[in-house]
Image (cartoon, rainbow, N blue to C red; front, side):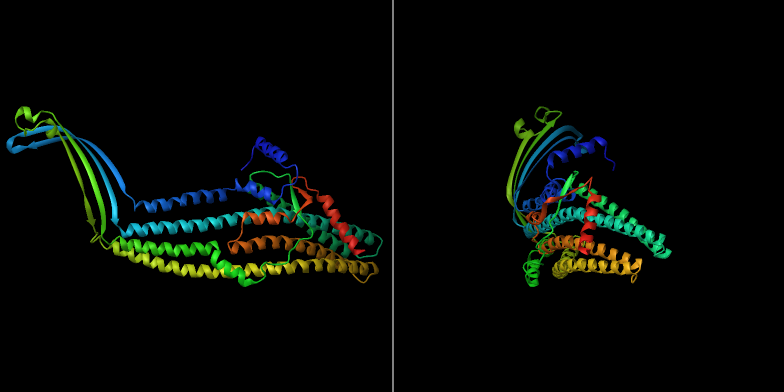
Length: 476
């Protein structure tokens, strides 16, 4: 959907007014809290689901009803040639209090279980919101690092192409070296285009999540405590997931709900007892007065035209046969209760497996970060050795190009491993039902107060030059 220029200007002015310093993860989360449509819908659905308990409880309380009717009547008695038109008004007030209703009791417990299921689903939606915020924020930083690396690689390969052409001009290398360098350079340009596209997509996704444009974001600090899952024992995470995982809780409450539904359907086949009190007032308005014509019963207008009826008592009702529908609904409810039990067992097994996977992923992420750091040092040394060999003629230009690309790939892998660790750690906490907004505040401490990313005017040239200089310094 296209945004009008005036609306874009409003967004930009708002961002400039509220973002004197770079926005951080907490700022983004606060903006998304009140804007993200998925999260707002989850909150409204939770508010609506809480009414289920009120509705389920209502069947246990008294009901009061009132009715009023006004009718035009025509009465004919052919044998005595009697014909009379008259109007009538009837007002009725009825109060009913259930005394024994098994179906109403289990309907109340069914509504309570439904509310518990809704609460568990709401908790899952809240954790999904926290993950979306983290993925949106670090998705931008991840795409930015990839773009910078792609630009630095394009520059490095471009300089290598220039050197190869110069060496070819003086007859030091064959034409195939120039062609190899040119082909590699063309590939880096393609990667650069893709990296820029991914960065702009990630930036737009963050804007969609929060409903505003951000001038700048705080970047990750260099040294972070990424040591693996805490607590370190996998069994602690699994036991917590069994008890607190929102999907497991929802499945557990759903088994209670289906059991109560089955009991309610059974209760619908049992007798129902209720206390009933009723008051009824009737008023007749005949066209002719029977007391005057002599065709009616004497006794006064009030006794003739106005009647009052009061009654109170106990009503007992019981369905006997409804074409087999009652028993069929009871069987259906019990079969669905059995299915819910199996679904709970499967959900529990899935949660345990997901927690194991998330734990091992975070554990591997911590190891990968250390291994990627070592890989950067190793590829830098390999590049330095390859360039030296190229100078003396023991290596060709393809070896140099491959070594350069391997170095930039190692740097991208290291950056991705750091972002993976953060998101995977939050995912692990989510699998145990323990992911809260406070976890975003904790991760927020990992952001730098000095290094910032200008989202719409990023310093791509400066950052890529800085990366190339760092690689060249390390190679000297």
